[in-house]
Length: 225
Ligand code: SF4
Image 1 (tube, helix red, strand yellow):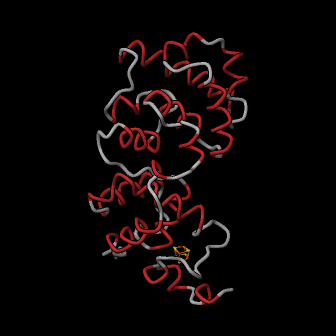
Image 2 (cartoon, rainbow, N blue to C red):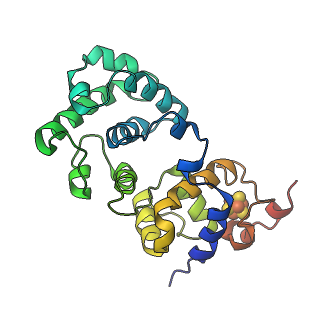
């Protein structure tokens, strides 16, 4: 039987260590990337396989011009392509954003759908984006798993190593206490980008070092200067 680390104990520490996004000075929030359901959905669609900084640059250009799916559909393709040029695959994303906006106008009256099946049916929207939107809309507390969250929870031992992002999301959804679910992604992503970084985790001084499988397996990391 798989042993998971004590999720409640880990979240108790992370929630004391990091702010929730709404209270942070994270540029994603201060730039208004998730201010409305429209922006939240478009921002996560832009963000796939792209850094936050590049996504924010595209979002700033785009949201200066449009605030609804009607306005997005009406944009000239070449104009849209130029606005989002900073993100990876901007050519593909131009077409997908247009198709997504058209589908939302045709099937959902111009409003962001509020259930998983309809979100997943939108062009360019996968599991991670769906979890973010379900959380944003407060329809269902969901833990979105990106590369930082996946790495962090697998190192700590909350989730078995080797599982895919989707499998990791399923396990996290199961083991995370209800009271922590709405903000779990926010704390884990901050921990994964600031402390439990990909190349050299900063185990010395890490707030969850006493609860971490990776640190147990590599005692030298606790003492590294
Ligand atoms: S102790 Fe090290 S490996 Fe474990 S969570 Fe902290 S930084 Fe990551």
